[in-house]
Length: 219
Ligand SMILES: *Cc1c(COP(=O)(O)O)cnc(C)c1O
Image 1 (cartoon, rainbow, N blue to C red):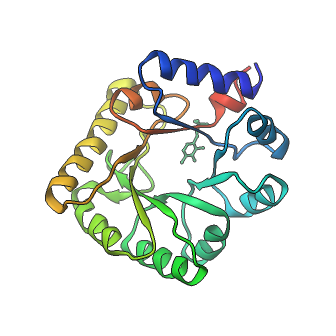
Image 2 (cartoon, helix red, strand yellow):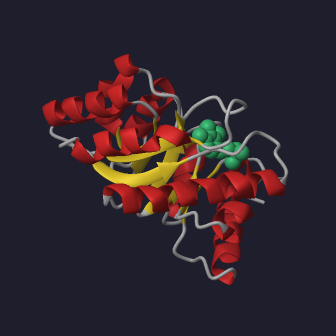
C-alpha cells in the first residue's frame, strides 16, 4: 500500500474507535521529500522529523504551510536552527532547554508549541525528565514567556508488550492529571504512541500519535 493509503487506513481505525480527534503525525525521518509531498497533496500538513540536518533541506524543498514537529533528541547548540523551521517541539526534557528555547524564541520572534518529554518507564528509557520531578519542569515551562506549553510526551520501551505500554501511557496521563491539580497548569495534549503501540496509547488518552514505519514502510 502507498503511504497515503496507510495514512487513511489508520485515520479510519481512529475514527472507528471514536478517536477521530487524535492527530496522526506522520514521522517522515526515513523518507525523502517526494513521499512527504504525496501525503501533503492528500491534505496532510503536520510532519515529524528527528534530525535538524535532515529537516532543514526537506522544509526548504516542500510547501511553506507544513507544520514541522521536531521529535528528536535536542542539543542545546541546535535550538536556534530548530526554531527556524519547527513550530512544535516534542522532546523538551530539561529546565535548561525550556529556558533556552524560550529565550531564543523571543529573539527569533516565534512562539513554539512545546511538549515536555517525561520518562515514565525508568532506566530502560533513554530520554525524558524523571516523572517523580515532573512538577519542576512543568513549572519552569509554565513560566517561560515565549513558548506555548502543549502537554507531555513519552515513549514506551522498544518492543515492550501491551501491558508494559499501557502502564507507561497510563502513567503519563496520571502525571498530567496530577500536575494539573498541583500546579494549575493546563497540559491538554499527550503525545504518545508509535507504529507498534498506538492503539494502546489512544486507549490511554493520547491526543497525538507519532507514526513512521506503519505509514511509510508497510508493504
Ligand atoms: C522514529 C520515531 C517515531 C516513529 O516510530 P515508528 O515506530 O516508525 O512509528 C516516533 N517518535 C519518535 C520520537 C521517533 O524517533
